[in-house]
Image (cartoon, rainbow, N blue to C red):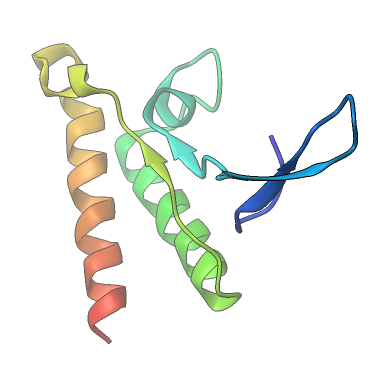
Length: 97
């Protein structure tokens, strides 16, 4: 929504006053990656896309926010569960270097 990778302070749209509330972006969501109505990527494509996105975010000191729904452990959503595990393993490796 914001098109950025850092949190920002909320500005009251009525008064224009800057408030202490912080807004955090959403980097990646499971359904957006794999659902045919959106990006419709395969498991492999989703993982590679996620890795490239993470590399760019961390290159510029941004923050990462992933949304993978709790129903991904269902057999139907097994692909998304694997994507989630692989992306977490990748970001863990980045943080250890």
